[in-house]
Image (cartoon, rainbow, N blue to C red; front, side, top):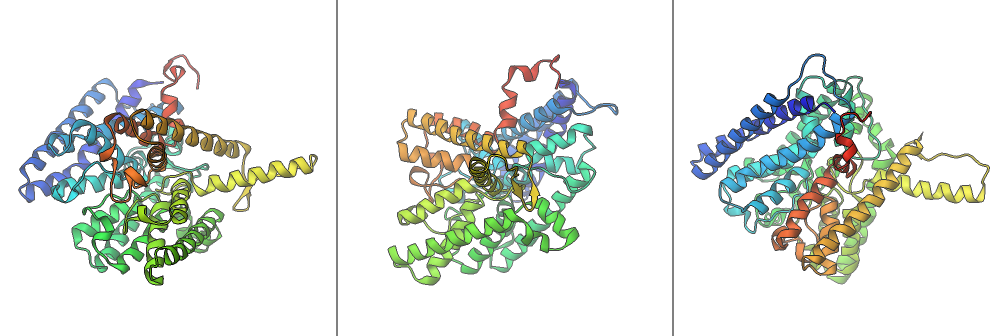
Length: 486
């Protein structure tokens, strides 16, 4: 691995992180937030210092090409470095201690959206904007956004895109990687603008609409009020949010193809149709359960079920009502929605619908082969045969997620959290949802976790955002050997 290339590109990323802190700094200065302005100024200086040191050690030349190992290192170390630099405004401004600042930053960039802040309404608007920006930059992907505006990375660019894009299959829709990244980024920005406009029409002020639009399209879930969406009591806003959360759960690559071939592409996509069917059934069952068990009116039951199914399945984590008080059946279905997640190539977390489809079809294929050993058959998705490597990759990812869920729950139980709460927090964290049940309920967050659990949560959020294997590769001793042929 060429460490010089890695250092050079990481330097560009830290420079971009400093640039992203300029809008909150300007807002803090404009509103006479002395502490906020000073914190962001220090943060920008640290980003510039990190850029200088990285560029002094490394740098790019015209002949340089990014290989597979460089791609893994840039993606994994880039996310880690940006998340660490992102904690500085919280800590330097005196709003959070070091551990809590780390949790807030990792949660923001990973799109988990769980907070350690008891009262977000006392925070200055510059910090609220930074929280939303961290969600937004992390949603589509820090490196993907950077690739949209940076020079061509060479033959390793495709692997960088694969390492950060979620889902079992990673396809590009344009010959050039940079053009593909630019197109995805354009769709991302357009949806954010449309979402902000829709929220403004629903009655939110401009600042709140922009912040919520960024965290909705990124499926991050950070808000500017303690009661998040429940603060407004606005039915139109809740349905509007549910729509954009579902849209954000769809593949952005699918939307890119739809822009070129027509909207019919969206409804012919097997994964997205399956996702819509699952959340529709879940919303109807939960609405009926709420109407019977909690004697809610049909309108309120449907409104609550549609919003929270969209919120949890998309892993956004917005809360309109305290779903921790819902009946057992509703809570069980919501937990399943957390684990499921959205579609491959979306900003949503979770296991991804495509993997669920592939695993069910794989099981069916095994059963058919037992009954008819001589018949050759393949797993298909959207009418196309799927390579065995992709199917086995889905199985390996499912196994890894389950094992890491168990591991994180075990860590929390060692740290004094009871079994039920540990499982809830573990599933919510690995799925990048944020809110959960019990200690991390709909109206609470990571603030009740002990310090060890908070620290470990940062690592598991990092793992889940990059879908585990990219991060685990960094811990392999062979990865760092210069002589190792990749």
